[in-house]
Image (tube, rainbow, N blue to C red; front, side, top):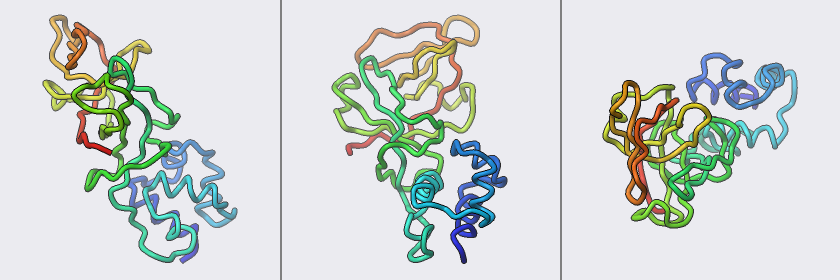
Length: 199
C-alpha cells in the first residue's frame, strides 16, 4: 500500500466519505488534497504531519506503512481558557490540528481539548485540560444544566459555563464558579464538556 492509499484509508476511518469534505475541514485546497490522495502529487513530510494530526493516525504509519495506523487517545489542544473562563483559540480550524496533544482515553475522534491558564477556573488548576466535541450548531438539550463550551451569538466570546434556561425565549443563563451569571444570552452553539483532567 502506498502513502496515497493510506491517506485515503485514514480519511475514511475518520468519517469523511468525500475527499472534498476532508480538504475543507483540514483547510487545504481541494485540488491539492485530491492530488495527494490520488498519488498524482507526492506528499511532503510537512503535509503528512498535518494529515496525521488531523486524521489522528500515526505519522510513521502514514509515511512508511510501518507500525499501526491508530494513534489512540490523543486529542489536539486547540486553545486556552483564560480570565473569565473565556476561550482563546490558537488554531484556525474548528476541528483543528492544535498546537499540542493530550491523552484523553477513548473519546470520539472529533474531540478537542482546551488548556486552563491561571486560576480563573478555580477549583480547576492551571495546566488542566477540558475535553469536548462539537458536532453541531445550536444548543442541544443535553447541554442544559451541564458545564459546556459555548459561543455567544453576534461575535461574542467563547466561554466555559454551566447552561440554564434564560427568562426570555431562546436565551440562556451562563453560570460559573467564581463570576456573576450572564443572563439571557443568545448562543450560536454549545457543546458539553466530556472530560476534565490534570495534564
